[in-house]
Image (tube, rainbow, N blue to C red; front, side, top):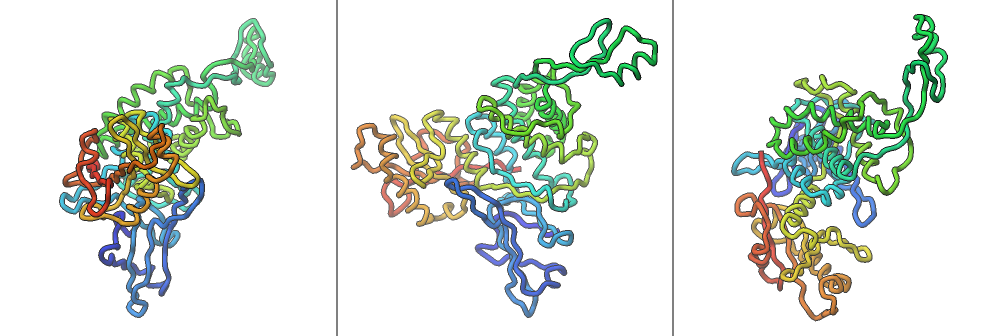
Length: 430
């Protein structure tokens, strides 16, 4: 297996050597991630391997801001891209802790779609248990949505049940079961019946509870990967809601079609629940293996950083932060509107801001700050002559902040630009 970390091969060449690559002279290899931006789908490359010297058979790789496992050559050569490493400490970015931080804010969990892409139909890849990024990621995402569902209350509806009733009949009589289990055993007063009940023990809730049960069994593994206190709090919050829900269910029992708007979280939760069940095949024992098989998958780290930044801003500014503010094709990351701060804020998961800037980003954020709709939201009196402040937030493991407060936003002015600032934040590591 080829192993690299994200964002390699840009400043200096990252060579790749393998016999399977040499057997296919001069070919390029890459995998893509389907990303939605401004309601349009676009394909971004997770990595690309190019031949830099065909005579010598030398290859080099460039990795983007995606982590995951996939096939370079199907059934022959897999590749794993890990979270980037802090070269000074040799520690990896703790993507699980970032996701757990997002789960603290229900309004942030509504935005966690499109973080991961799983290729269930492709051949699986065998990896070590500690290399499994997919399972813990799916579980945390699933629990975050479950909390939103539990907060509203589990959906109730009519569902079919079977009972062996004594001295009475209800609903549909199951003749074959009555003969086999009652009349053949001289239980003449009992009748097997099928009828409907109203409550929470529906097929949808059973599927959610089954995936929740598998997730609970994974908790000891989480303790090896990251600090799991926040995860235990999630479990304790969710667990009582499923006391009256069984776990015996099949994916075939699921009704087709989307849920009503009142229970719109169910569609996403059921999708994630089916993913988790597919990973384990209904068996908790499969979680204890040292080696596991995983379908190819990719996780979008730039999107995760965007949501992590949103959770940091929400922690201090609350509802004064607007996320993905849209206006005729333009989509801002965040808009901050308080009495003290009126700012256009952008998150950039780029190392270039540690010692400099990106002029293209400067033009982008400046353009956002000139939108009339932004002025209308920030200044009700439509004072278009004001210069709106802009802020770019980026990862900085050395001098960055662990929390964002109102005193930090204008501390670092970007040279040569008016009212454009940058702010580094520390990402959790493991």
